[in-house]
Image (tube, rainbow, N blue to C red; front, top):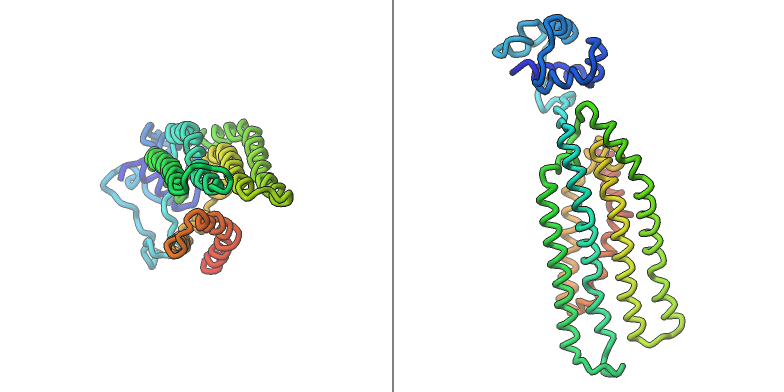
Length: 336
């Protein structure tokens, strides 16, 4: 191991941050960051001071071939299986943080549009289903269904293309969602400043998006109360989906970038505790959505009513967000 690695290891063994070590040595955190990044070498006095603070020899710090000495009082050699073992944190540089924020900003509109397309995909099929020969429509039913399905699959294909493209761009930053991180000097301050400047925009997007989602059933309810013709009510269902698509689009535009800031700061849904819960709940989540998918396909093939069975997905999503996720979280906390 080189000097930089040894400084990192010894600092983390003591549970100190870069600021803690810098304070003990009477230097800036930036200096410690440069030492650990092998961008600079501490002078002899600082090496002697570090050896004293860490409880190791200067030979150990300076000579690459010498490994850490095991204290004589130590009975058990620490290993990954020990309950006291703390895995090293992933370090995030200023360049990585800026790249992640930049890519998130560029891809957020496309991601929001892809989600809106998924919501909007059955709207045309539902609207055309309401126009039967009884309503004076000359379009044959099989043609109407065919057009509706073509539009549906076109929307889904566009959405999947965007999901895959965006996912490939952000793949290298997946660790921010799951691993405990440590940002280099200046990163937290930069992210906090950007988050603060975006807060008003986030609030506006969120408020308008939620308002649209809340009022989206009003046209449908009004049509039903007014005893409007069936094809009008069916059109109102399509309008409802369109309004939900717009509302969700605005919510995602406001929330996705804010989540990126939270990942870098380990705040909100990305604290160390939340990440630990996510790791433990992944298996249960996969089982849940596997059952939902199987149930949806079985119901759809048996009833052949694909225009209605899609309701499984919003219901399953609401159920997961309000009930299932809380049960999984409670079980994870209990086990921990």
